[in-house]
Length: 457
Image (cartoon, rainbow, N blue to C red):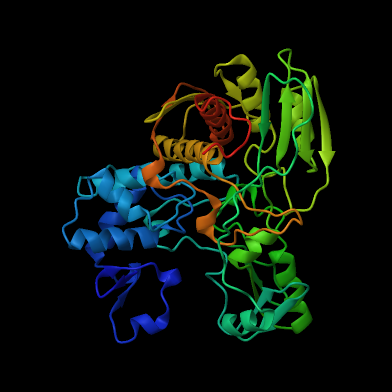
């Protein structure tokens, strides 16, 4: 938002600081500003779920009005440092900012929507309305007068409004720990050619889990305009909304806080692995249904041990969980990158340097090349960020100490190399994101010298 034309981060700005001042959200921008910025974001694939883009557009407009050079990467990187976009990997946002004044090509947004939905694994809409915050998020269409339910330590707290419900639940503000992320599983004993230990990792989707339901209908789905990278597949908010609506004979909103997402939402399961030169070895895994089978498919001669330890929940639904780590280990044994094929049938090969990530992708003929490129760039950024920087501080009792979205380690725009995507396939279109993620993760690990512990720093 803009406060007297100065960009501010809305979620951390108290109301007392804006008393008597002019507050402008994306809806208050001029029609020309809304049109050109929404058009540029759509043209460059700079918006996927759209949750973060209204704030980014407001910041760009605020600095554009002051004459900032938005074609300068250092300037744009500095402006983006106040934001987080998990979907796009930043690059297409920078491109949208640097080319906002050019004539924008038209294209079929229904086809773009089909491409996006294929990659997201759920219905996803592409269009200017999404850029401007009208993407249809899970809590957007809640009827007036609905009760609000928030999660406490052992029960749901119901009140007339969100503030009252949070007070009843004793919700605290998120905090960032001084503890560094540590892999929780010890390395198996052995003379290993390559070894790898990973930490707890947060999928870091931005729209927290939410749903609503009346006493006779079906609950709103928490996916809304994005799939949350698999993080919401097992979310309980829809069923809780249905239950509370029927129990109280009225419409109920159910909302997770960011703290809830970090404490109760699924994480990437940590592993600890050692491989010999012949591919045999031992892999320890935080017990997660379905992940051992994925690892075994890539590394069939490895012994897998599943362990139950204190910590947040894990899930095989998160992007390439298990088999991406297995492909990294296989690449480490080879000492080079090769084509990696995802369960979707798409394949990718990556080269990673200090200033460039180059990815070849064979995923059929893209329906819409702009969104195909956008999703591949986003997957590449997520992989590079995971290997180099991401992790949660979880103590020996399993308690998560990182409760803010800034503490997950997601790389900023300024820390992200340029990403080049080359489509080499033809034929039926396939979802490419997981293949790109695994290929870039393997290439990044190799580029860093196959460090035994992630994040590599």
